[in-house]
Image (cartoon, rainbow, N blue to C red; front, side, top):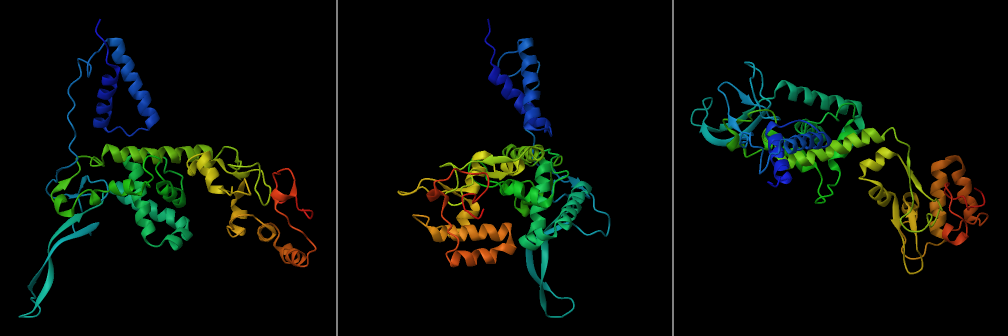
Length: 369
């Protein structure tokens, strides 16, 4: 009996899928691949590929640019530019000193070689979408500067290259944060993968003259597509988690915050997914303050208010953290409370010294609370 090489069959259909450039998610790909493998096993196909399968040739990422066309600066496909219409991008390749016709005997610097790129209609619509997303969130441009538009366009292009539809209904902040997340594989962000999808950045401008992509995004490598599918999967998970109940994140060490005694920090399920999972989210809201004299953690507000003191967390750290808590929760009572603390009318002790049980409400061990 001939042995059936299942791994070789899977590898063959992976090459077929890559050649066809199917715009589907990883889950859909696995379902597609498993069904093809099951069919091959039923037929009894053996070896590196089914017997009746035609050999698959590697697709070329570039093609010769047709006459009268320009390559799209984003997806790379050949597109036409109406007469008199401006081009999308100009990349100067060479400048030379030439005679100035307006000044006999004078010279001027003139561009003698440049790469002209257009923008097809779908990619132009994507630019307009980026403008609408930024208009809906004016604070984003103010905080991040003009370069945020370029980043947002690159992120939208990246999701389109990965075949994702998760960008629909999401805001500018969500799309920007998705590509600023850290990759578990190497600790880098997804920004490099987003930049790599644009045709204008595929190669040196001089090497792109007379070239275009045979089809939209054909120049994007499988490695980059894999990274982009990770972003798409995370965005889809965030969308699904947005309707889930919030998550209570317990401290990594101890049963409550050393200062306020809160037993858990509540975070929305979508934010937990954005940060990469429960462990990453817990590390973002809790700080381990275990030392020779202490064993436990501080929640984010207490860590900030305590001034990140080393060693024992004394009354001064507890007073500052408690006063900051009251200032946020009840600003009208903040001034009176601080006067009571200064006049020793109210003693604020850290929870770790109060011999009290942890609570779902911060500073529940303080008498006035």
